[in-house]
Picture 1: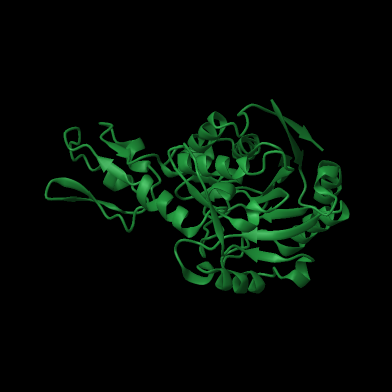
Picture 2: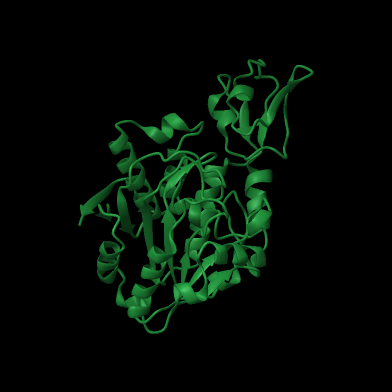
Length: 338
């Protein structure tokens, strides 16, 4: 059973004080430490604030590390669709080498990592493959097609190339309808969050350009007539995360989830929706599964209901259960409150 440290405060200094303990000497000796985070879509005001990130960077530097902030361009284009555009967006959102006290790196070169998992080979940023350690700093929130946006998603979608993101969203997770089982009840059409399904000529048809690969259609189908071509997006996120973390075997890793200013949708969304809960604090751990499960549990406890299961069309446990199966940690954890 893994330990997850809980800091029930929004104070940056409270986080820094605990990080002084949590960041071990293995992060020192001049090691190049990648700090993986999402630096926010321009126009979205709900993302990790630069002062908080800068304090984490300072703690790493105080331990003798050489940290750099890191992320990847997005699949859907826009102001973060290329490395240069993302750097400009990061600057507008307050992330520069001057404000952070370390380099800000958006990946533009990748190395292919082979895998026997269903996702197959994935392209991982070369700067990440060359890093001496990894600190994953995640703004925990809801997510329209993954139910929760936590550490696993930060790793699985944020640490791969645009080509791999496309494979996850547009190829492997695309739904396939078994026409012999399908009764055209239209449940899938009604529940699809992307509005990618329609009844045409008495057949359920897919608009592949609209589909997110979330797998909601398969979960709600009463006839079990729909399944992902290979695996749904939540399973693929966990598989990609496990491959990325495997590159850090023998290297220091640490995971921080920030449970502040949590919204219905991702930091990628210019319109992230309503806040889903009051501010809770910070979690620190060494297991992506345990820290995401603890984050979800704390939100649910505050709201007095299973918010993520009720609010989103897909099962939030799928990425956690897949992560557990792949060795990313346990669903059971010990929460140590500071």
